[in-house]
Image (cartoon, rainbow, N blue to C red; front, side, top):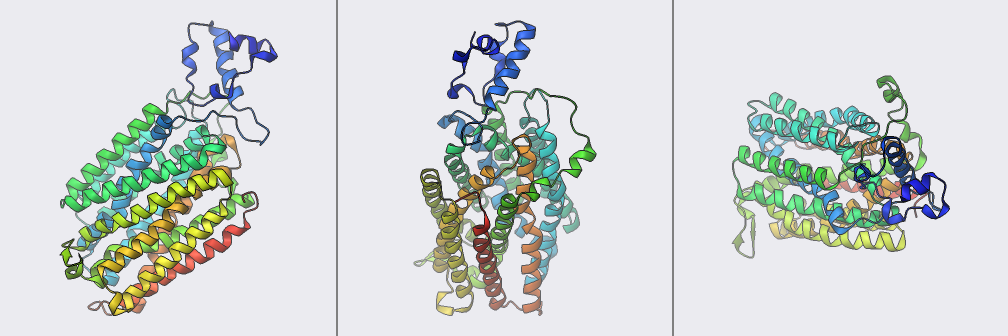
Length: 487
């Protein structure tokens, strides 16, 4: 009745804001109104949802706690898979398959990861662009998430049985493609469904889920020694959480207006968001900060093995780990504790004050200090112990958690075109994947230059790598000042 009065022009028939959310399933109106009216009702509901408010933002109702859980649970599964994969599983498998020195395994790791980043360069924005105009009955995003889940499971199977480093690189390339097919449309669910005033809270949910997922994945790698079994369990968690998000965040099918753009047109307009000044600056900031994060992340297990030493993974006389794989899993604990604490505080602060840049400044400074401490651990003998590594990880976690939350909120606020959320988020996601090419390559070549003897391991080379991360963070913090539309 409300919809019929609205179509008739009744000014008192406006739907309440609580009723204008993208999660609304219009099929509930089937059988109430006839065929022609039902088509108009579906169109009217979507039109009402997209009405602009005084702040020039889409009007959406606030999501419930359960809906926020459903929206973010896939981020838990993705982090449970990719966090331990990048920190533990891939470095360990590359080390086994490369059978080389410190510099050789660093170079092999960099080359393996860079192929995945190259695939992401085209896959992420293209999958997002196709998703934006999809009229699938599951909605715009869910079919791509489901496709990515299936392909990722197959790629993990190939990685588990890879006999050579070349085969392993191809399998990881397939995993990277699968991840980007699902992640670009998935990240668009945030601007699709979450009102602007709730994006800080939604980002906090995503941040907490990411850290908890990394914690669970780290626990699996700590207690399970078989690489095949680890990949199977992580893949299962990844698939289950993706299915939960699809089921909880049920989308309405998009009503197509005219013909979809051709592939040539999609490619021509693929990188159009980069012409937007603030989006471009935010992309550059995220790229630089991610360079610093990956410089730490990719070489953390090697740092523990070569600098701390397998006989020194103890705390107050109690041995905590037998090898660097277990040690890096333990290092998750203080890092994630700091990350969860700071992410909650950063999300609340951002929503209440609207000051997002300040969070970037503080969080970046904390990560810089942590990298300086890691660098000192490498060259100062009395600091070279597992306890100081745990302290450095805790400090890094405080900075990383706050930054991870706020960059989600800033990215969704700066999306230039509401009709191309997935494509634009796909472009933004490149700021997370492309640093895999630069960070690993720069650090690997730097270690080769500083440590040319394949039979020796120089702590100085690790110290310089951590100082390189400090430089990346410093430039990223300085660059965020140029964003004009965010305070």
